[in-house]
Picture 1 (tube, one colour):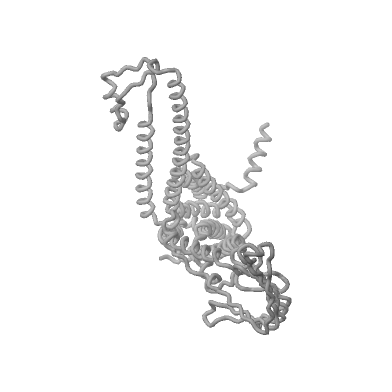
Picture 2 (tube, rainbow, N blue to C red):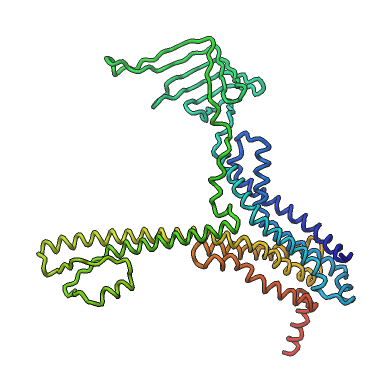
Length: 480
């Protein structure tokens, strides 16, 4: 490899890594802000949080990678143009495409790596972090009593203390309400107490001293209107709490593996085929049910010899009508009764059709989700290449390096890419366009822009030079 190629790649890697990790940091912070309520107060171990952040970071790579490629491309070739190095290379006989060649192969390898990641690693990261979040949200908060506030997270108990020593577990002024089926069954007051845990941390013992317990008793059979209670003084009492519900248990990750976001493109292709086949079969079965419920009432109805062949051609599974009922052969009361029955049948058929319509829409949405995810396996690698062909010539045109101008252009074009991507996903979700159009909309729109910028940069076009436009308008004004 030539020294020039090594120099260009090194100039690219630095800004790429910095931009990538900065973007990842902000995206992870956004995730933490979204789930902050589910994470606080759960007593989670540091290893669990680090594992969660690791898998979440992996799922955010498809957002951070295109931005890093775009910004580093603009910055790399902007620095080359700003320091006249690109001009020197062109003067030596090298074209812009030849200067971009080493970076193109590097980004191509990066694109192939992105495809491998989205196809094999991203599904694993998706169901891993979702499983951890599910476990955390289903876990009750840790046993932490705040002085002066009733603690209600233990089923059947309301506990309040006046003072608490977190180091020794000693309590002062303990008040406990133990709930019965409908009302408070026991009330316990204690001057002092102490919290103790079992060796396996499955149970907590609350040791109370110098207290009194008020217990409501069931009314006697003879005196149903009287509700006696029992008052008991004690020097020492121990209450046992089961803490198994406070521990975070790992859920079965298999329940997440069938989601469309957790499959590679081969599994998605198989799922799309099986789902499409199943939906088509359900539609055919529904059509047969509707056809078999059709009844024709017509005074002038006559059996035609060509009816069987025509009907069989149109509806192969239609059952033949054995008896033709004519309206003129019925009494008025029978007609009224039959019309009422027909109206009920029509309403039932209408409701059935409406329900089937909603089911078909749900089927379409579900199938579109699988197709959308299938296309997303390929859109990210292609988007990386497209954004490179936007960033590299753009840097050569603006001839500015550093963090100022490249950051502005990178932000604008990335927002354009992101808005087009989100717009395509929303249009697919609403059923306005097909999945392949929505997923490839950003690539289809930005690819001509990349080709245009590459053409302009190869011909040394001053596309963003304001002085050129000023001179042009001055000439127009002089002619007028």
